[in-house]
Length: 247
Image 1 (cartoon, rainbow, N blue to C red):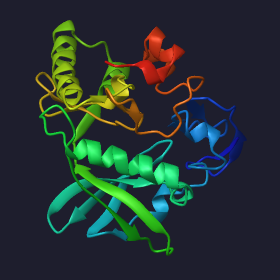
Image 2: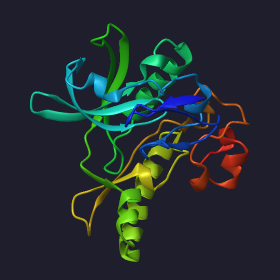
Image 3: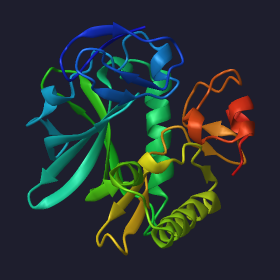
């Protein structure tokens, strides 16, 4: 598979199944889910900045917060209200399986309301400035840093680690009570807001989660030979068969 770097525009090859790629020209790093590396050009040709200033639904997109295997998260506003919008990649909008997965993710997250989970408020579709249908959902806008970035800056005190893990566990427990298993818990998916010594933790990115006990997954790729999640942070049983993970 070939990717186009959204940093410098250079094209470079990436083996199928890779979960992270670094542009050999400028060093821009991008993380992908297993789905993205098996789709021809899914997010590879998506230019996130192209939609800045555009209106999706009632929301005006103002900045790119992050990009992943399935789409882009934008900062957006409606009057004085600030939110984050997750927008499905245009290349996937014509694929009914991925649209259904995106819709299932939004529907499941709309049921969750907990101080340690990112709140989802609504979902919808809208015509973009290029005439393409954009599928999106509107989320709480979190301000802070993620645990991965914090760890890279300096060693983290054990007392802070305990606070972060405790809050993340509360959030994941709330999701489990609604039958939702995250399957990609890692430092990059734990956002820390507020006071550095006493942060509020938000668990984010349920893109490869599973609805238990039905076994229904947000992703339509449920074969046992696919790796769903991030290899360095998954349990042995998840590596063997992600569809069997129940906690």
